Image (cartoon, one colour):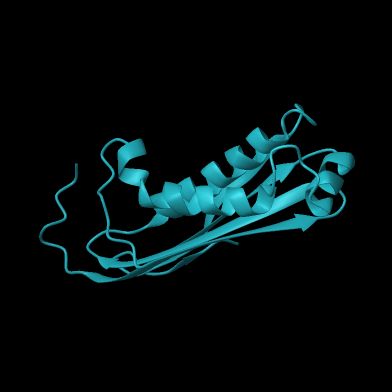
Length: 143
């Protein structure tokens, strides 16, 4: 792991986004609350939050961080997608981009898992960091 012991703790924030593209009929199941495994958006939201908290267990050489806030929002977008956004905050010597990306990725995988019986052709797309602030490298906003 990179030694961050000499870096001062600063407020850190990162936001990541991604989407799961599916058949319109599959999205209709989500919106109607008729998916066989239950509340797709609620379960995926919880999975994303839990994943952010466990990022250091999943990604080799990632520092374990005390997170101060994790939000994961999932919205349906007609005709065929669930968009996911995760924002993670901490005060510490290293950033939270990996935690935000992990939250989005696991939320997307959960959407896929909960709907795969209805639509095996779903695609997880465009997982990326769209904003980060704090630390030596300053602020980043995706174009």
